[in-house]
Image (tube, rainbow, N blue to C red):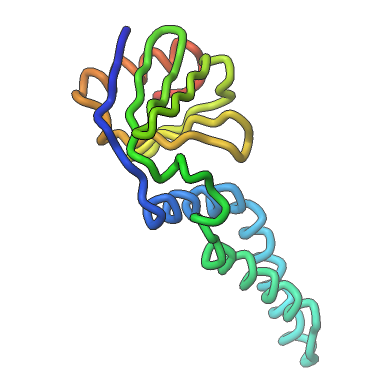
Length: 161
């Protein structure tokens, strides 16, 4: 299996959107728990006819949690390599990123702990917070996407169903 993607480039705006989606996915449970606690605190303070500081506390944490992506400074926190044009070469043993400036990153598939496929891209995780972003539009053909999916499934990095 040899797959070579088209050259693609990630813009800061696109990366920020991807990181925002990933942030909300990771905090979904915490957000639900905080919402329930804030709602319960508000209901109890209304039923008891008194002001409850816990409601203010939970609402403040909710507001901070929901607005945190607004403070992402993608260009300052991310390597300049993430914004360069690049293409991927994928074979049985290695996942290679070839950048426009000549830099090369080659990884074995054992370095990935998980792969998540979304509608428009793949997240190839090396740890819980570090990942490589691979847009599906970068693949040449639908056959290449299918071969890549099947290969990831054979390595137990992705579940297709």
